[in-house]
Image (tube, rainbow, N blue to C red; front, top):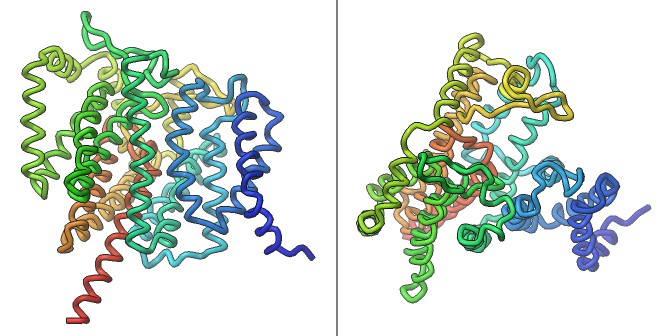
Length: 468
């Protein structure tokens, strides 16, 4: 009989071999085309075996590699497949995430019902999964859509099950931030030197007016989602500003300058509105002086740079893309009215637009366009019932953030605003972008950190009260 413990020990002692296999896997994505399936499968099995033993390593692996792989995918220009046909890199991560998540939940059996978002999660994904049963055709395509939507949801439970100490939660937040800082520096570089960027600077230019045309910062995510992440990390910079010692706060000043600069170059109107709304919220709730100083600095920049002011003004005007989205929204509303309660079924929007609007056809016989309105898409596919379940999930996340905010500790109030910013960004993004679908992985991570803080700080307060 095979001794499982010996196998685990061998894997851990030969970590360099595992790393070598992983590097070979990345090379195979580029060069080996379909012959790499066996290698990819072997790597996934090895990684799952290691991460089941060390769940924290899985979380750090995802946090570290997810944005980096996104940049790599755009830099090497293979959104769908490798340099030839190869593997879809995003598809590999989805398959790996689903496999690990299911295995973890079955083997570790975390006590999910003690967490704040469990019931909203079960309701939302239950309704989404139910919608698969009444989609008329392309059920596999619809199932794939559900898998993509729920891939990283287990992260919420994995983090809460394994990052139980405040120090662990802080380290995870620091790791998350440390990955994005070099990414944003890279974005600054490609703005000035587009040849470095591959497809990071979108080939399609944003036509602002007949006189002005600028490439926009986009890439592995929609420009609106890139802008939303910038807003979130701006508030994280404020969070660290109050956590760091005086001599280390210069790092935050750099971020206060760099992030608005990147936000401007995303040319994403929705993200600009999110930025203004978030500043108002965090200014009212906690950071009044800092926000006032920042707003005055922005006004000064706009006064001395009328070209920037002009671009912002022109970009906020209706354009052909806005009119096209209005047409799609009218079409979507007409579909919703026909089946308003439970909707047409998961992925129906993509199926319908593929058959009636878009000429693109993929291997599933389906192609389509995005409505750029997540609320309308949810209403069409899962009806008003699905929309209410989604809003309930967002509401519970916001409620949990306010619970943390009401605790007396300064760190609780500071991080609560980070968590609340994530909710705001996801919800405003959904009005004209892909919201939850683009930002789900970080929604689960930030919500888990929020609840970890809430659990630990409540426990500390209770202990202090018992002692007194």
